[in-house]
Image 1: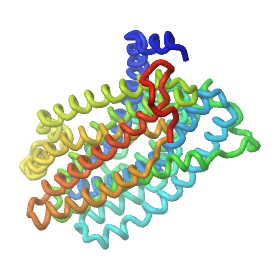
Image 2: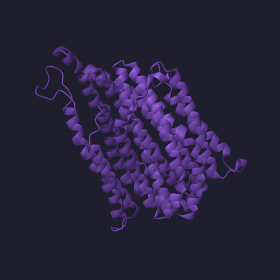
Image 3: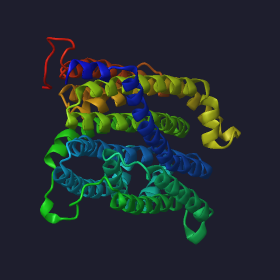
Image 4: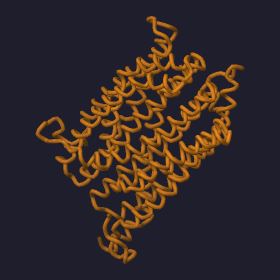
Length: 467
């Protein structure tokens, strides 16, 4: 690249173009991520109408289910940089192998998640959960089981469309799924067909997952950007590279989500009201994180595509724009969580009765630390996604994983029990984990960016390759 080309790439117009690109794709994906949480929101609202025990059961089962889905999501995120880079380099045969390998990975993980969830009631019984909560959780899980396989395969199809930058139908599909879920919940509510409340909600979620899978399969089949040869068995499978990138990410996602799952188990020792309040706050934390997740997925696909094209000047712009937008949005969301906590709790419960006052009071207290955690987690999400786009899965990410267990769960136990802070102590442990995670990732991130090749005529003496 010549010096004139380098100067042109650094012009304000080039920066604006990169910001528009990320803004367009990031907004679509952020809206899609938010819309996906409409279904868990409906679930919490429906379980809340059944009473405190069903609400608590839905919270603990939801946190375990989220652990499995997030782990699968992390592993399959290795598909995005691999597929985006292949498409960026116009290697359609390699792209087709990635799609085929990704589908095999998704089916295997979906079957594994189903088996694991089938054993959750036994585990909850031995964890000392409230008998009323346990009974509701058992009914809920049994109804949910048929929905895990389609739900996880749908993640892979969605990532294929993101990597191919074919986002046209994603929001329409999630809106259709949410509308179906809400209508089915209302139709099955009230004991129709002899179904109890938790069973009806679980069946509705399973049916919704199958519907979403069918819609995403249709969108992928009609996409002009998904590579040809996917249905040809002679094309082969590209699983090693996807797993090399995805397994460390899945492990980190697993431990991060296990931090929240473990916090739910710890919170259950403080009673049904504390557990229900914790579930409400986690729901809003997940909703808040959907925006930086959307930005991060767009950034990862963009960075990986530019790596495939070897366009490092534009890649640096994409990285900086992603960081600025992700940080600014996380600050704004944190402010909303801080000042709107009371309204968010009441919106979730749909009531302000005397029976719910203990839940409302506990949730308001948890929201203060939730806002800080959201800001830190948003930074982790964006930086880690950019590193994945750069195919950087350095061992520092494994240290982040250990931090979630050590500083997070260890700190939660310390603050909650020996120091006597109860549920607030659990949230202090969660926040502490993300403080350490941001610190470690910032160091690694700076090193990875400094090793990117620079255009001719800029910053002589820098390294010229990624290690």
